[in-house]
Image (cartoon, helix red, strand yellow):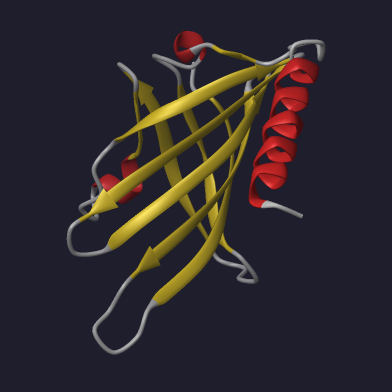
Length: 140
């Protein structure tokens, strides 16, 4: 095949994908204000561990943060939200200059929240990677 034929084939494939995506009904929508002002209380647990820690997750003025991790030097982070049916999905990243970063992914359904998050820290001799979960309810 000539290079021109490969380029044309790639272009046509991309054009078909773009056209087909216009026909797929869009259920999810970005709606940043769905969680703003909400606070969830609950328990956090490291994967494969029994011990739990109380924590509070807050969505304030477009930023997400964990009260427990804020005490350890993690800043708040901008969060992204999308709603599908009766669930709200969100993602955020919080960072500490000394302790690394945490990537958060969660689902809010009614007054409950389920979150999985991944803490990573790059070290000079080794890297640290840990997975956690948080389950909580809306603070009223």
